[in-house]
Length: 286
Ligand code: ZN
Ligand code: CA
Ligand code: ZN
Image (cartoon, rainbow, N blue to C red):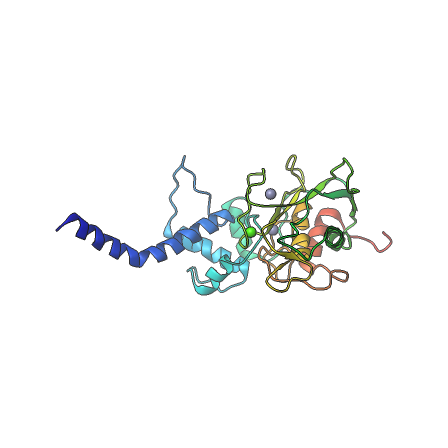
């Protein structure tokens, strides 16, 4: 047989499974990015077993609140393509993963601020061309209320550093695209929406970054992303909370649409318990 014909046959045979294979390797990639599988390590070349991957899919399904099938069914693939926070869902050992399998509730990063008066600043605002509805004062306002959601539940105080001031504060907020000097590049519109750094993690501690390729808005709507909802979530990380598998919880990793009225917004019980475990309960006189 001519080499050309043979090659054509091989390629045709491969073609039928390539899409499936791409989907599978895409899913494996996704699972290791969000902590459900160990990061591929060229030094140990630890091979992923079929059982290992199936187990990781089950943990992901349980965490995300879809049926635990262990296979990449449509509900699972849909969840994997839902816009979300870039932080991993499972942080730490396999042991931790087993524990997370059993309990649906909040998780703490193990880090917290050793003060209750925190300052914040906005380093850069959303691009008006991408997020035309959001002028800077509105952004400040939305972020103020997002902090307030947490300070309503725990004895914390947040103050915005005056614009133009040299001080940057504890929590620096910025809107950036793609690579932005922290090793966690954004990915254009969709996919990852934002991330924040836990307290006591070095220079970037508390810093909160939003993907400036998203269409940010006040209230969501017309395929935009509600800034308030994502900000409350990210500030949860900046204060030391990890992702929660509880529903409802603002600390679920997936974007679930706007949470509604920002002035009267209240954290769900799971989130209140999490922040109170770190910083105590707010008494009404504070
Ligand atoms: Zn998150
Ligand atoms: Ca994105
Ligand atoms: Zn970043």
